[in-house]
Length: 167
Image 1 (cartoon, helix red, strand yellow):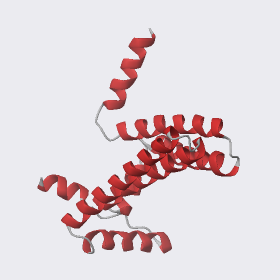
Image 2: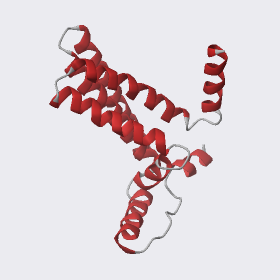
Image 3: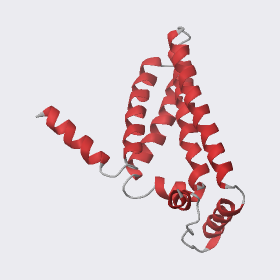
């Protein structure tokens, strides 16, 4: 448990950079290390994660109650955003951003953020439920691929499974 706590507590120092970015990076590191206790981090993570899941369920209920695909798209996307943000409580914002934009998952991260933006754009601005649904499907796949990047060898296992199903 202590090893997990050290890995997720944000005690890793961010790389020092010069200028404003380096100062902001150091500020995040100080904030990560000093402001929240471990129990507060766990509570913050749990609350944000549960709120994210509830938003996704509310969107699903709106869909089944025939409130429209737009309401579903907004609540589902909001739930995903809150769920991703919840992990900042565990690792701290600096470490979370470093892990999200690591070379092994940068494409998945960009795809998740792009589909979140495109889903909201299609639902709220274009008011096109069909296009929003397509972006929701892509968003779900991107979130799954992004989540698998945190599990060792999970992506390889999924690739091999899909390849064996196709051939």
